[in-house]
Image 1 (cartoon, rainbow over the protein chains, first blue to last red):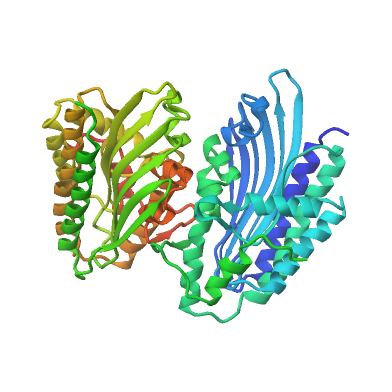
Image 2: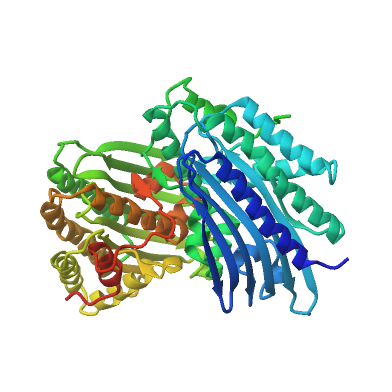
Length: 301
Length: 301
């Protein structure tokens, strides 16, 4: 079966709607998502949806469909045979920054790429995944997150969870801090060794399960009492999110190099952030437990 | 005359002291600089000096002397002949984030590099410069800043100001925002076409003039009355500083790739930052004048 881009596009737009609806359900302020549709003669089009409320200080859910004359460097470093290739990409990206420091930041990306090699051959692949970035850790949340990811993976292939969980631990890593960004989840790229239909089914399983993985955690944490100390720590840790996204994240660098819509790409950056020179948490504090325990690659199930 | 590294090191440590002393004089809270000396068996050593006060929400003045087995990518992109070269680098970097939104952020870097090519030849060069990032613009401050830079350049070469001012406009540019980071100043790299002594004199003129360029502006702006609206705009605009430093700044990427002391490298990031999705200033406001007028390359003198 050949790549069915129409089916992919329908799935992605539908996923975007369902994710936005699920988040709106949990938004205490009853704020709704604001929509910005954009299109660019040469680069393609997209629909950026942003919610700024009380539960969600900022939640962004982007759909985009871009076409380009040549793949940016961020996409060819691992595939030199695709340097100079024309490409087309469809994807949904979401980054959700809750206000409550006990509620973790979540990230989802599901994407489809096809590129035309210089010899005329078309290559296609799927990529994506999700990861969770807590500021204060809860074992039960980590277990639920990873169990949901595993259940989704197992519907397609018994090895996928272990493989893509390990990938996520490796990918969502802040090299200059020697720290993981969060507790991981799934990360896959260049998925095209199964038939198109199976790869696409896996993409759907990942996208759909993100909502099941995240919603119960938000329900549990969105109203948990916190103090200014917790909020300060959250804003401080958000600095790490910025560092990862601007220095390492392939999707962000791809978007900026490609010349995409900057405000859509950078919706992933947290609304309020603090850097404190050489700050370290108190010994045996909850804040120390974040980096010392939760942000180490760990088998949660 | 051969490179005199001892003289360079003395100048740089002395510049660091003088700059810190000048900033302490303007610090309303009478806070002093805190010092962190670091050394690493293989990588070299440094002295990081940080002031967190009322005038200066954060001011960092770093000295470092690093040695490496091979130049990181950030330094060889423009010099493929130096890929794999052993190197040694001495420098002072400073980034100063005042609390008052009417007081601009300032940045200085002066550095000396020498590298050993694979054929054994030693090459050396100087680089550096300074630039100013206002949140609210004042023509008189911009003129004073650039006039001081020009006066310093003119002591060495009549063409240097024009050349290095243009370089700064080009270098301190946030491509994905299509915005300059600030009102510019000076930027030079690979300076080695004059005799060593003249190049070093120029480095000294640049370093010394930074204090003269910045101090009077701080004196004038540090106590100017402001409102929360001004402070919010400052924190929002500081997001651009983060974007530039983490996505484009060669010194930052060099340091992170080299595996340097992260807290010293990232002292350049502002203490409090905001991102607001798709925010734009009101028409004809002071905030709009920043990007529409001050952050365009402009002949200030």
